[in-house]
Figure (cartoon, rainbow, N blue to C red):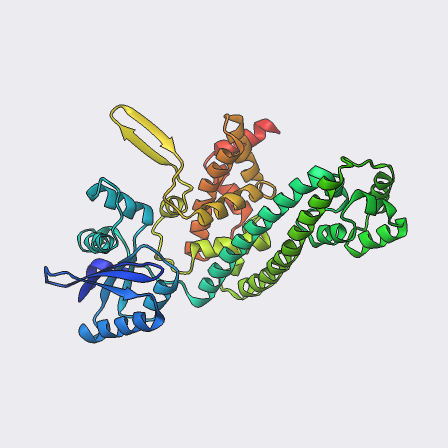
Length: 422
């Protein structure tokens, strides 16, 4: 696809409002005022049949399609045809555009297709055709986003399990280890109550801990001593029996979730190590095995997608929004963005504090100015995106010493703050 949309001689413009069962189409041939309106069923046969007819109708000349998504069945079908140029409209922007012409807020599918068509024909100079990433990057994007969804499920299960244990067996939160690990599942499967673990032989417990990677004799003996002297939180058999039932049910779904994450981690690791941009994203301090592939997925493989770091800051939601009304001005978080991307940069920046001296200094400086933890991390992410963008654009690895030299050359207030705090 040509990234310069204004230079392309499109044969037709299409607004496509996708749905789970059917899609609404508004099509306008170039040079015509007539708009064709019709619907397609959501099926591979209908989609590919429609696209083949489009190619025949316009002789293989490029057509522009405006749509509110960049993934899913419809996008994957459109990507199969090189004559189709996809223009992705932000759903939040589309909702605001629709509201401007439908103050009542009613959502009518055929009208949405026409609004997309109108946006495409009148404001095409403000949007770029969406260029799919290369296959290696797309594979990583799908895997890391799915992993995040599974991790969210793990978090939900472990939160539920933690609350149940607090109700009847809170000591297990110390003795079973991290509640989001297989060791905790195994511990609670063997000893679901305080009564049962107190009956276990000390050597049995020692063997259990050693087999699960707990090598500290001091920690093991402290746990054994605590088990001997522990008292039950409650003797209510109804509370204990129902809590055990619920806890065991959660464990039965938590264990395969943990195993799934491990399998995904292995595949992500393999694909990331084979990616040509691996060294760039692996060089960022604190990125690690989980966040380095996510940063790569966030930036993608199309170096023309973002013309500046500020575009990445805005697209990811890290850059705040400034609004004015009369003499009043206020700043707030950006809501029209990909939460996964925002979370990726936010989490990486939080981790970088432990590994990068200047990042730690900048974070501390923000906290010293009265910002809360998350606001300080977002401010740091804003800085990091400029660095990540430049390394990605120039295909160079990050070097902490080079960045520190740059800060010294600019007499950065970050270094002054670090020096004063030392």
